[in-house]
Amino acid sequence: MSAASVIRVHDLRIRYGTTEVLHGISFDVRRGEILGVIGPAQSGKTSMLRCLNRTLEFTPGARMQGLVEVDGEDIHRTRDVYALRRKIGMVAPLPVGLPLSIYDNVAFAPRAAGLTARSDLDELVERCLTQAALWDEVKDRLDSLGTKLSGGQQQRLTIARALSHRPSILCLDEFSIAIDPVTTMRIEDVLKRLKAEMTIILVTNLTQQARRLADRTMFLLDGEIVELATTALVFSDKPGDRRTYDYVSGIFG
Ligand SMILES: Nc1ncnc2c1ncn2[C@@H]1O[C@H](COP(=O)(O)OP(=O)(O)OP(=O)(O)O)[C@@H](O)[C@H]1O
Image 1 (tube, rainbow, N blue to C red):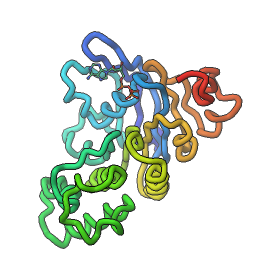
Image 2: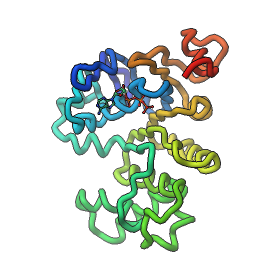
Image 3: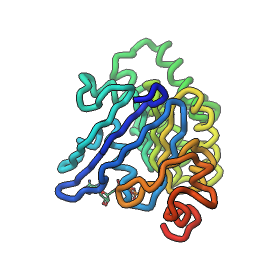
Image 4: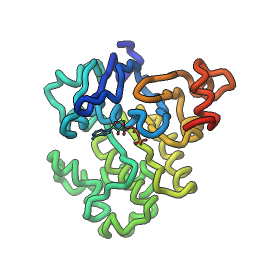
């Protein structure tokens, strides 16, 4: 694994029952980059993400084969799967707010992990909400229910929660599916800032979002990587594979 790689995936296969949906893909994720992952529905993007933090194993019948290393450690040999999951923050397509106050949404997981001092929790909640560009809008109503926020605010709250364990890798799965374009741009700005502190994997159904944000872009199609290259090349007139051109220019997908 190159020193620049934070994740290395080799010959990864995923099956649900007898159906294989990822067919032996290999790639690396470089420290500090935003890796965009694009591809039509059902191409295996979400399954691939859920493999990285071993949440795929919660799905009955799901099986993975192949090697996945995070910071040089084989995720299936790790002694502490909880530490792996803390290292990799996940943001789902729809906000998944807990039926708790804004404050408790962010403090929930750190409290469960043993952080109890109010001053530490206050600091952490403010830091995460600030990083998610939500602090100014909610600082005067931290005790209100998170579920009462607008959709875009709830998605930023989800990001704040994902940041509460200080992950070094942040994965976002189609985060803008249910939010308006203005909020989407706002969160894109958040991601540009977070990039200074962490590696980001951005699965997106908006190809132009990958174009705006990603250093490199992976095009996944029917469980195979068609192309993984610099975003400039993927979105150029002459990417490495004709199917990439057809997909990013809207000829199919
Ligand atoms: N729990 C499951 N049980 C059975 N098959 C599944 C399950 N989850 C996903 N699949 C199948 O795996 C394939 C890849 O799905 P996946 O959600 O990983 O793709 P995706 O690219 O993220 O799609 P989308 O953009 O629609 O979310 C699809 O054919 C899907 O039907």
